[in-house]
Length: 105
Image 1 (cartoon, rainbow, N blue to C red):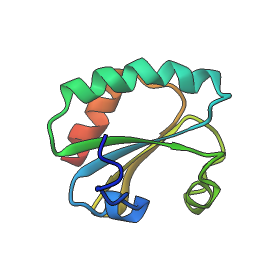
Image 2 (image 1 turned 180 degrees about the vertical axis):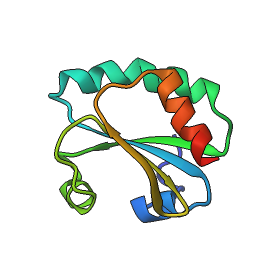
Image 3 (image 1 turned 90 degrees about the vertical axis):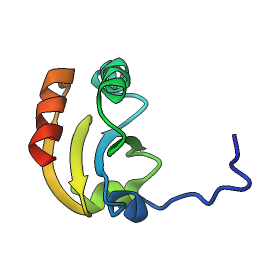
């Protein structure tokens, strides 16, 4: 890993990158959040390079979480050009997430 030479991107830089960004707001202690892990992994293999999937731990990133009024986890938000295009809480399937991403494309 090249963490020493690579600048860490801010959340704002990521969601304003021009790509579609699916953000999974989760918590380590959350059972349903753990169920999202393999779903997001499968989804990442099925979407194109213009879609980025990131995870935000609400306990480690309270400022980001509160700025988007995250009240329950998992909450998934799709951003495009820094704007929220879709938002849903709870466990979702790969087809549901693909449909939401395709609607934003």
